[in-house]
Structures are given as structure tokens and as C-alpha cells.
Length: 298
Image (cartoon, rainbow, N blue to C red):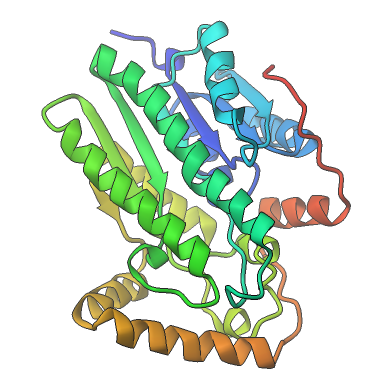
């Protein structure tokens, strides 16, 4: 029987929010980890925190900017060169941009497509090919409750998450009958640094949201992944919203979303900070502009 401490899980966006909480869950279950994010200092801090949870595992960290074309291939090649077999891939990294599409920054949104779609797709293809070759592996794709909901003022983000969900569902069919499972996690609004990165944390919509805890979302996703479920929708309200949106026409959903989001654009509130400690740390590091995107796997 394979030694449980030979297993590896690779997690992108691992230094805050859902990715950070998933790393803790994998560590507790004896997985070695490859943690990926842009900020090398935050990665090293996360590495220390995770290793305290389970001193028997090995935690690799890799500071890489997945906004950059070719970065995902570089990450894959690095794990290959070190002989790391990735048994579980978690495509958690993702960002959004809040605002009316005609007013938001084009280059920023191209970067979001590069991160949310291109890098995610590249990592999925490369690691899935290895999984198919050995007939084992798991992939967790971070979709969103926005995956099936037209979302004015978050148009590009929602579109990228629709891509993520569609890809996960299609690939799940392609690997059916094998020992490989692909799970899509569809969380609602969660207490992470997402809204800061999306320039939305002072909006009325965000102020009024009831946010899910990252640890609760991560636990739901982790359990669903281990059970081989196709999709995971955490939270009663999130499930209810999913049922409601499946019954309403897209035009009605989009109109309702636009009304809510437009009000935010006219009446900003005070900044709401994440309560989740790792997410608050990530937010602080962004504000201090201490990003180090040229770290190495160690």
C-alpha cells in the first residue's frame, strides 16, 4: 500500500481564503503540499503554519505569477523536474474586477482571463494527462455561484467562472469509468480578499452581503472532492439561490443583479475588511506592494 505521506496536492492561490483553508485540510490528512501564490513572503509564512499542523509532511512553495503566459507550464515543468507526482490538483487562484464593463480596465480584465481561464486550463490539461496515464487523481476546480448567473458589474469574472464550470463538467464525462474524479466547487460570496482585489469592498452590495467563512467553504469542497462528487454548492442560502436561478429566465436574473450592483456604484459604503486572518494578511501585503513574483520551488 502506498505510504500516505507520498501523496501530493498542488493548490494555487494557497496563501489566503479558501485555498489556505484547503491546504490545512490536506495537511491534516497527510498530503504533501505544493503551495502556489504570487507573494513569496506570504508563502513562506503559510508553509510554517501548515507544517505545524502536521510535521510529517513536506510543504513545497512556489512563488509564480499565473497572470503571465507560460507561468503555468513553468510550474508544471518544475514539479516534473523535482519528481513530484501531483495526485490532487486544486485550481483555486482567481480574481475579478468590479464595475461597468465599458468603464473597467481592459488590461486588467485580460489578466483576469489569463489567470482564471488560461492558466487554469493549462494546469488542468498537463496534470490531467499524467493522471490519465496512471489512472488515478483528483481535480478540484473553483467555480462560483456566479458560474450560472449573468452578473452585470462583474461580467468578466462571471464569464470566466462559467467557463470553469463548463470545462469541469465536460472533463468529468471524458474521464468517466476511470479512477479520476473532477469536482467543481461553487461558493457564494466568501470572507476573503477577493473583494479588495476586485475593487469592490466599499460597495453597498458587499457591505450588505452575508459572507460564508472560508473554512466552511473549504470543508464542503474537500469533502465533496474526496467523495468524488461532480459539483459542490456550500450553504443553504447558496443552494436555494441556485434553485431559484434555475427557474428564472437569464434576462430576469441579469436585470435583478444589475439593479443591485448599480446601486453600489452610486452609494459607496465604508471599507469592510476580511475577518479571515490569512486573507487579511494577503490584503495587507498587496497594499504594501511587497509582491515577490520570482521565487522558486523549495
